[in-house]
Structures are given as structure tokens and as C-alpha cells.
Image 1 (cartoon, rainbow, N blue to C red):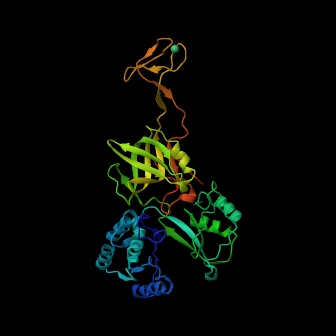
Image 2 (cartoon, helix red, strand yellow):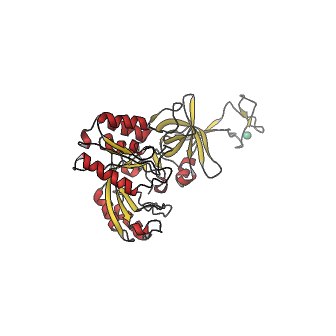
Image 3 (tube, protein in one colour):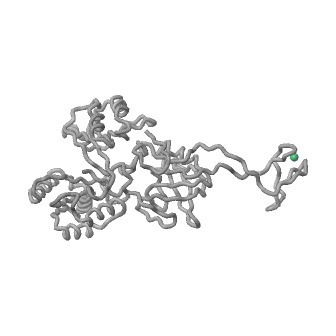
Length: 383
Ligand code: ZN
């Protein structure tokens, strides 16, 4: 099982992933093998690398509920190494750590992952031959797009059609050639089979918590904590504004409290959906809170404000009326007509009720694509 932990943890290594291997060999032998693999493969010279191993005897579904509670915590917020180590000791698990041994947090979280989450997805990962690591990947992009078409929607985030990008092929110099994500093991394998590429050293299908929104918790404006990710309900009170770098900002409020929301430039066409919001719209926003702002991954339009208040037009001559002074209504200078207040005008909207999301090229590992379903409103999936 491949587990993604909180994407907001600063000490994370890249995607903040941990792996659990389920096996029927005895715990001592498993420990010996796992330690040997880390000794052989971990790049401990890297200052950010602090590996850890935890071996738990027993059936994954039947471990102490304290372990799965720890897993859920590690996906949603920073956790302390000391807490992981003491839980490992209390449960009688075996563990090993290199350097700070912080990797034991992820290792313990991976042990508890099977019981921690109701939802899961799969990823078929193809690995490169070691001699090719660090060299450009040879993958036929057209075959990837055709394979993605074949697999959708059982496999998702294989490509980004809007950006014409093969999202499943990483850019970093690691051993992964590509990773096909989806809901159905047979479909992700089928997509992998259709990709024309360099020789694959080996291929594995992992069960994962990717694409599940396991990191999100219910939140309330005014009570959000940096480094955690939330679903938050509010009303747009500050109109969307595109700032330097192409990032789009707006504000939502709930009662007296308000919070900023931001769609960053890499979220591409998602920003057009955000720019279409208007003051008065009722929304649910989802994302991690950093520096006091919600970094948007998706949002739902709950209610659209379909009218605006405008300076009235004279009924006699059709010209815009003028203010008769603060709080004193409007009048037409030529016709002497009078209106006591602004008029209401219907505005056309480019948004519909329901969920909007960042495109596949900007998806975080753990964020749930709309195409997976199970949302509380209509969805407008990106692909
Ligand atoms: Zn007039």
C-alpha cells in the first residue's frame, strides 16, 4: 500500500509518501529484509533523508485502532516523531531509524493505513532500468493520450488534455517511468499496457489513499490553522483579483470572520472558474491553509448571486440617473424623475451550481478528482 501523508509538512520528502508491504513471512525475517533494503537503497547522504522502518506482526485490519488514528492524524496535520516512537513501543512493533529516523512516522502511518481509510484508489507504477535513471524518459506521448482515452474514467489524471501534458510521466530524476492512477486495477494495467516506451524494469499496482481527499477536514472561517487542509463554507465578500504572477485572490466570510483564498498560477484554467465568482456567491472551498490563506484545490458553488445593485435609469428618457446626495436617492436632471434607491439588475453568470477543480496537471497526490464521484453537488470534472 502506498500512503500519502500531509502535503503541508515542511520536512517531507517530495510527495510525502510511505509504503506498507503486507507479507505472510514472520516479523523478524521481514524486519531483516526491510532494513537490508533501506541500507542498500536509501540516499542517506541527502540532508533531507531520514529513513525509518516499522514492522508490525498481525493482520493489517486488526491492529490497534490507535495505529489507524495515528495514520489519519499524519495525513491531516504535523505529528511528532516522539509520538510515533512511543506508539511503536506500546504496540510492541519493531522499528529502525537512520539519522533522525523521522521516516518512522511515515512507516507507522503506512502500517495503519489499511484500517484508517474507507476509500482507496490504485496506481500502476512502471520502473525504469537502473542504467537509465537520470536520463530523459522515452515515452510515446501520443500513445499515452490514446491509453488515457481508453482508460477514462476508470483511470484518471493520466494526461491533461487542456495543457497537452502527459501527467503520468514524472519530470524528476527518479526511478519511476510513469504511474497510472485510477479506481480499477484492471483498467490501470490496461492503460499501462498501451503505453509505448523504453523497456520497463518492473511494474507494480499499489493500493493507495491518493485521490481520496483524506487530508481534508471540516473547517470554519476564523478557526483555520496553517498547515492543515479543510473544507470551508463561506460567502464571497472580496471579488476575485488577479495579482502579479497570475495568482487569483478572493475573500470569503462566515459571520464576522473572513479568510483569503488563492488559486495559484500553476492551476491554469481553474483560475477562470475562480475569476467567475462574484461577491455574494455562496461557496465551499477546499485546500490547505498557509500564511492564513486557503490554497484552492477545488470549490463548490452552493448559490449564485444573480443580481446586482445599479444606479437606476430614468423611466422617461432612458438616461442614467444621478445621485441626489448621500442616502437621498437618484434623480434625472432633465426629466426631474426620482428613484429612492438603486435598482436591481439581473447578471449573466458563467458558473453553475456544483464542484469545480484544478486540472490534472495541478492535482496534489491526495486530492480527489471530481470524476471519482461521491460529491454532494453536481460536478464539473477537468480531464
Ligand atoms: Zn430622464
